[in-house]
Each structure stands twice: as structure tokens, then as C-alpha cells.
Image 1 (spheres, rainbow, N blue to C red):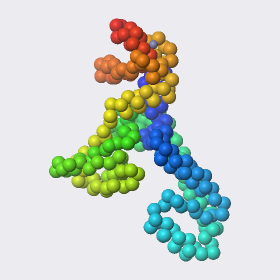
Image 2 (cartoon, rainbow, N blue to C red):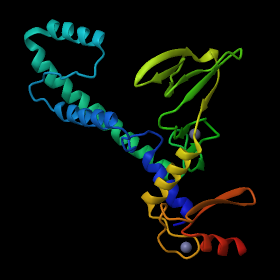
Image 3 (cartoon, rainbow, N blue to C red):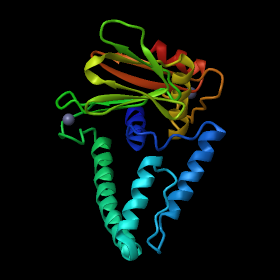
Length: 248
Ligand SMILES: [Zn+2]
Ligand SMILES: [Zn+2]
């Protein structure tokens, strides 16, 4: 397996969403733990629904719906839970299949060959893209007409809106037609850290001496080399190995 294949296979595992990301802060860790507990709590045989994540107004609606179901509410809860599980099962199988396709370098949407980069994959045929974003932003949304950009920590594009998040809460909903472009601000430090995480996770060997490379070791380097129109990435465990490679 080439370095690029190994890196892209890791990329495939993350698949563009951030479910593989390690929580960085105590707050994120606590959130993750509580959401895992909640998911475990979903297996409620009584048919009652545990809804700590549901927004307040929707919780009120749910209470009204359950009241309407009245004496049958627990039976209905159990039945609906079963149906929801079946739907999730199908969705999970579909998304696992999509990851397999991605790993084979194909667009999960239209089967076309993907243009793959370490932190992004793009289908030029149908426009499907998946990419990493900087963990804590900032994301700058530039508006039509060149006003000051609106800044947040993350943003999501829905069909008609760009939803801008700041500190885990929605800070703005911006109509897509008024958006000129979106800027993801990467610090060089975060980019370097991500490269190193990729390399460490893959236990990639030095491109010259073939020994395991340690991203924390002095002299470690990841370089991009252009061969004609394609770019290859190589990892070197030390300065002497990189120098030896450069002289060839
Ligand atoms: Zn496609
Ligand atoms: Zn080496």
C-alpha cells in the first residue's frame, strides 16, 4: 500500500463527518459522554421517551402528542421505537456502503472517480464533496455586496440557508442567495497537527529507510512532491533521510 493509499484509507474512515474526532476540551468530553449515555438510555423497554436533547418547544409538542395517545401511549412508544430502529438500520447500512465506495475512490452519490486530497474529496461530476474543517473555526461568511463577514465557529449549508454556529448554538441563519463565499480559517499549527495525527494513526514508515516514523521526533517531515500533474506525499523520519531522498 502506498502512503497516499494509507492516508486516503484513513480519510475514508472519517468520511467527512467528525464522528472520529477526539473530544478536545473537558466540555466536549462531557457532552460526548452524556450523549453516549443518552443513546444507551434510548433502549427503554417501557416505550417512554427520554428527550433531553429535544428543543424546548418540540418537547412541549411531544408531551401533547403523548397525551393525545393517552392510555395507548406506551404501546405506541414501543412500536414506534421498533420502527425507528428499522429505519436507522437501513440508514446505517447505506452509510457504511457509502464509506466503502469512498474508500475505493468512488463518489458515493454518482459512482464517478473522486479527486482526493488529504483533507478533502470532491466529485467533479455531481458536486459531492466531503472535507475537514478547522475544529474551532473560525468560519467567515462573506456576504454579497462586500460587507464585513459574519464569523462563527462552524457552519452548515442546508438547501436554502447557511446555518452559522458559535459556541454550540445557532448564531445566524443566512439565506444562501445572500452569501458570496465561505472562508475556513486554518492556522498553520492546526494543519500541521492534523497531518501529524494522520501519520501517527497510520503508523506510516519513513519513505527512505522504511522505519516507523514518529511525528513528534525532531526532523520528522511530510512533504509533497509533484510528478507531472500528480502530487505524492512522503513521510521522512529524520533530516538525513529527507536529504538522502532529495539527492536522488
Ligand atoms: Zn458524484
Ligand atoms: Zn528514515
